[in-house]
Length: 537
Image (cartoon, rainbow, N blue to C red; front, side):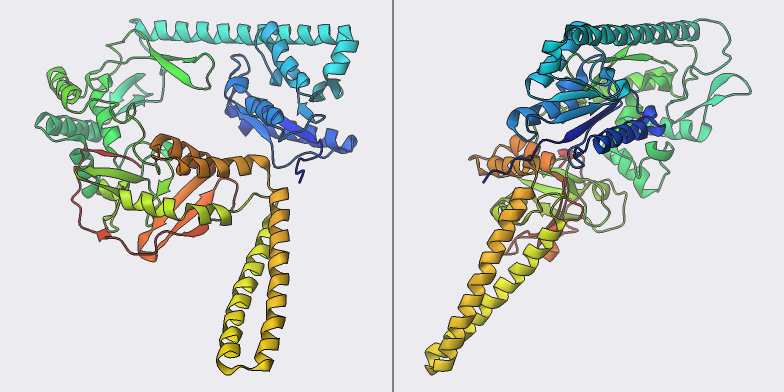
């Protein structure tokens, strides 16, 4: 059965900085796409929307790792059919790279059978036919790309010069008139009345306590746990304020040179070919921040940390849990942590592990959790929702499945009566019920087929990737985790109830799935908290 969609319009929206989303950039681009689609009687796809928020087209990251690259990939695999339209507010939304590279991007799109529509230019269309027949159109396109690239390069140069001038002034000996930055370590503040940075005395005292405890041999996990047990308020404000003290944050405090008054400014640069950014340290400035900790104490603690708790051992190590990044605690919603206890490995709420919550310290054996999830995966994927286009059909399928189960129960009852009593009436009723059951089964099969027709190909591919990853022997943990993260937003394990709740990226409500049938050795409130071997699950 051919399930490919007919050609339709797809909106591509990009803006360079996240701040533009707070203005009218997003709304303006959406409205322009809708207006063009309505005026040209073309269906604007509402499910497959492509947005690069805070992504600059100057480096090409939107094509290499962003939504524009996803669009092209979907065209190549057939999810988006040839003959479709890509709507952009302006050609520079596609690329602000050097004209040579920008033209290559347009070529890749039009060669795939897509028409690019420039909404800012009266809906001017760029496709293989128009570019081949109209050389002036091609030249105009090149000129527009040259201008866009020059604008970005000029703006970038101005920003870099302004940053360098500000850094040099801050590194000099002139009195400050305004702060270099207000993104400060938690124990510092800007004193506007004195035009200088100052200590927040209560926090500085707490910071010194952390250093003293670390100097005495206490680990970062134990320090964080103590702060949580004593209900010490976390630092930060708004979205930067953590719910509880994390050992990673404690370690960050203990290794921050600002504790001894050294400020290390950084400049942020794009990583070539990637969407990520890299922070590059610049020359340290030693006379602007007040010291909160003695230098010798700082150096002793950092020497200990560098030899006993080397940073990055988990960040550079292979993924150790299939549930990494998706498993959440059923009680408080915090991330579930993988705790290694030598011969035994468990899944535990990270907040409970850090003694930051009052709910029970419950643990699930990791191996049994993986086995239970894998054992029931086939049924889970079969019953998983298939996307936002099919909620009514999903409800109808669920209703029909109930009717099938009821019909099968009735057939078994009538069969027993017909055999035991040799009743002619029971046999006739059995025959009629079997016919009705087959009719319901046929309706169910057609509903499932219809659902699969409406299911977007990208949802199917995500579910198929999960099935493929878990079918491999031996199971590749990193591959399985990558597949889960691509398809699943949140997983909540409820062992005492015998189920797992899965919220897929393409669904609005969680799917309740069977977790295990035979209760394994469930342990609650039995594992002592320890810092060695804990990592995000």
